[in-house]
Image (cartoon, rainbow over all chains, first blue to last red; front, side, top):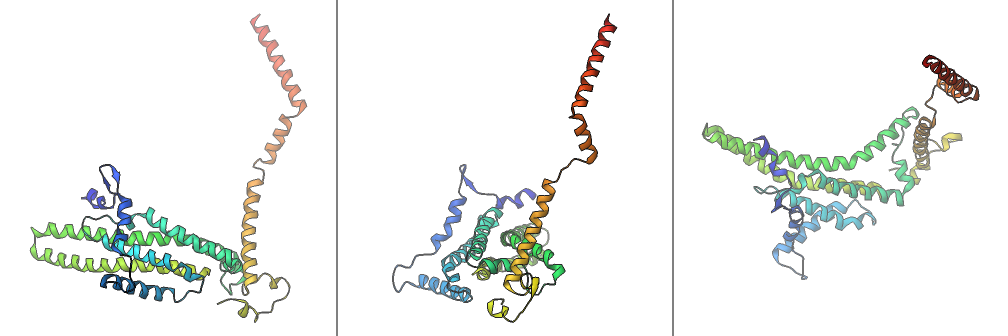
Length: 226
Length: 87
């Protein structure tokens, strides 16, 4: 039981070859490229969704921040679609791997910080000391702000990993409990099944929310540095 | 949001003009001063000698000419004694 609980998080391989790259690339097939001025219904809905998200997310940014529009939209679409596909039974979810989430979080965070230091050096350095800090607290607060800056990419990656992994584990456990309870008590199994349905609905929401939170935080870091 | 327009309302004199937590330049200088202080502390602890004064005195004595001559004399004395005991 303990061995099977984490088996779904192992990197998949087929005939000895790792297929995780194919799995990571798969969601891009689900987003068709618009090829006409007026497209079919699916592409029109896709365009409308992307426009809605990008308008809401990029409203706070200035000219420089809006150059990141493609990056941010690709990020939210990728994480959202990967998380949703991971809710299919027996599928592998790349966003449960900390290595992958760190690989997304660290370069994006570093990009925003380097942009800030390059174009607004004074403001970026001054950001380490909140305005109005009393004199005796200045050194301590500078150290605390520096640590909190370096914690940001770690928090981004771990938040996504932990949320998706925890959700999948819960579904696995409650599903197993439902199956085990069928022969023991049908009523309890039914209640557990209702909990499983509710949890699955929650996981659908969490999949989309986590994608939005990840992208929004990157967007906020960018806003602070542009 | 802090910026040149909000900085204009503050008027500091002396060292507070450059090191304060209100205007952008002041905050930047405080941050740089903190990082510089930490760097100096690290440099000081790295470069300071790990030997105590007693160890330094011992090392000075053991590397001196007098000590080396004494050492040679003692080893010669031991060699003569061993030769005598063998005979």
